[in-house]
Structures are given as structure tokens and as C-alpha cells.
Length: 90
Image (cartoon, rainbow, N blue to C red; front, side, top):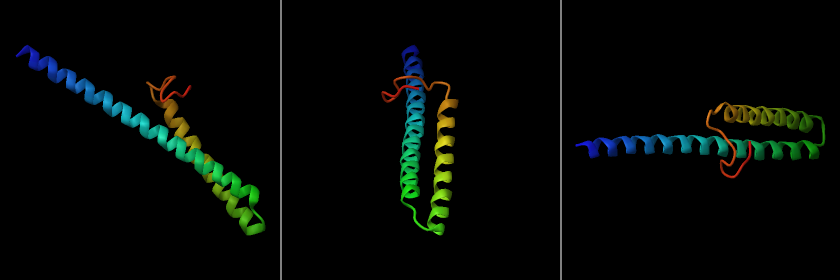
């Protein structure tokens, strides 16, 4: 019966590690998408012509910057977030 207990404990640890990996992968993906959105907003701002288009581009750029900042802050709060996660440094 001891082997069964060891095996179930091992499976619980593996599931916890998988969940942690999935959470970090999700955070990384959100950061990547937010950065791409910010870059698109910046390009739209650079190409904006006319008062309304510039106003819209500024609003979009500020929103994209804030979203990017929020996701970076979330990543920094992760206690296990360390170097070499997906080959990325801090």
C-alpha cells in the first residue's frame, strides 16, 4: 500500500507543476500579445493624419501601453518567475 501512496503523491506534485507551467505560459503569451498590440498602436500613431485619427491613435496607444504594463507587473509578482523561462531573461 505504501507504493500507492507514493505514486499518488507523485501524481499530485506533477499536476501542480503542470498547472504552474500552464499559468506561466499563459502569462507569457499575454505579455507577447500585449507587446504586439502596443507596437501596432505605436505604428498607427506614427501614421495618423488628421485630428480625429490622432486622438484615436493616442487613446489606443495609451490603452495598449497600460495593458502591457499590467501583464508585466503580473509576471513580476510570480514567485517562481526566474531566468530561462522559455529562454527569456528577467
